[in-house]
Image (cartoon, rainbow, N blue to C red):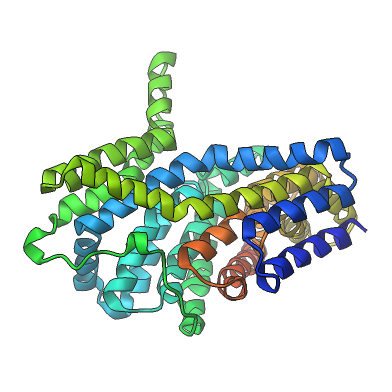
Length: 437
């Protein structure tokens, strides 16, 4: 019955948005309240679940998304995006631009949460789109696939790293096995699958539309590249520092503070204000006006992501993930497939890849010990399952839809299928490695 209620609520959400033309945020609120009631959450606590879900997702993302939008706006307005694009074109050529973006996304995605890396890299994708006059989804999907793969099952990313600890796996071996699986998965879900999406017409947010600036007025490549990717560089450095044995608690706290994504984004925006703004002869008032415009452009995106967080929290508070997991736990199948399946079903029901992976891990951990299954492969199997079929209860689904400005149906046909390909390809890779290990 629980699964039927979840499916009904998801279907109702899609109908309200597509057929009813209801604002996505309002549709999320209505469906979240209805879902909470149908799933047995006391009426006095349903609103609390909705508020908690909104607060949790916005509390962790609103500052990062706003600062990222401001940085992206300045990168576009200053000509930095145009400079980076022209350099990429010279280095890779138009035919290979997807591969260039995919490799960039793979490198950038390793140390960053998906939402952070998405916001950081989307201006670069759009600058390529406008420069080459290519379909936005066709160009951008390979980078999104790379970011998703690293988020799902490549340590030292936080979620896979947590799975490594829970399964007592080896971080280095898991990373090596993960790379062997991730590379073909991202190629298949990225450049290969994107060939089928050229027909999707999209007009990305105008806030990232780069101006056609004369060559002599553009910032240099070093300035453009370093400033645009400064958040990524700072976060990579802060991640590497964590592997250094620092005895002083005070020094560790300083590195932890400056490695926080919010602080990193603020530092990067401050630097960009001078290197791409004041240093290029722009007035501070003009720069601040660009920042204000950037926030206006993403306000609806923030509300939609908040709505997805509300629905996710209702599902979690109602115990949907635990009920689904318990019903699958008794299946007599290969433990690796079982781990993938549990994570996949929880992901579809709850929406959060991290919640799906960690919940599945707590269920399959005893099975792992009993069956002597390779823990490194189990990390990858559960991680791959946690990426299965992202849809309307996942914030990433709405990030992709709203930034690329496409319909719900087109998002299913592009983003959701891309995530599914990654998940299935990841499981296939795990089972192939299982034959030899």
